[in-house]
Length: 242
Image 1 (cartoon, one colour):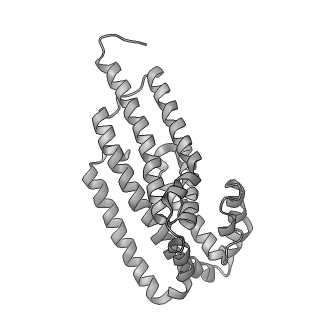
Image 2 (cartoon, helix red, strand yellow; image 1 turned 60 degrees about the horizontal axis):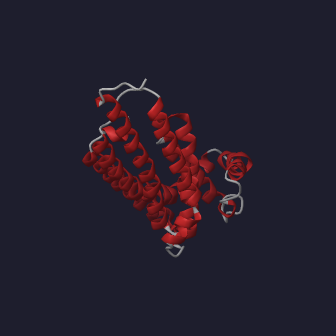
Image 3 (cartoon, helix red, strand yellow; image 1 turned 45 degrees about the horizontal axis):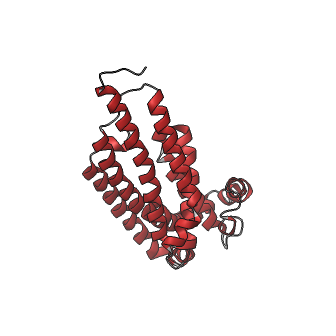
């Protein structure tokens, strides 16, 4: 379901519930595997927070969002499709969703899930007699490094532990799958956005990633609002342009 169709309070309630559950799991894992998890914690909380520098570092991401928004607006002016949400609803819920996604998704995926995944993958690797490590080191990590043009090379092929790189890719895969409602193109795009958010977290701090994520989504939602306005203007106009 399109998140815009969900009531804003319900969106926040879901995020709070998932975050509380994730923190509980993280706490239980920390009791037994704190030594294993500390390198991941250092990656997330080690960088000095630099929001302006982080936003500047990923400016192409915002340019991409703006270009996509403009494309959607142009298409909306020329192609007839089902009525969208009213513009006011689109803007209000879109901005609220952007803030929630920036805060909670970054806290969950770039922090809690990433740290928690380290001991989980270690256990799975032991159960599979090293198959998990072989799969990541031989195929998934080099492929991801190639796809991101070396942007995260220090944290993928140059990681101090294969577990850190594997945790990053596993969590980002879950982030990608969580956006499957956007279709195949949106799913692929979400994977690259997620990798950019990891780059921001490790280089400029978790807060920088939260702000960037919220801003990226807000640009898209603003484009959706203009698109919605154009379609509603057509539907209420006494003239037909088609």
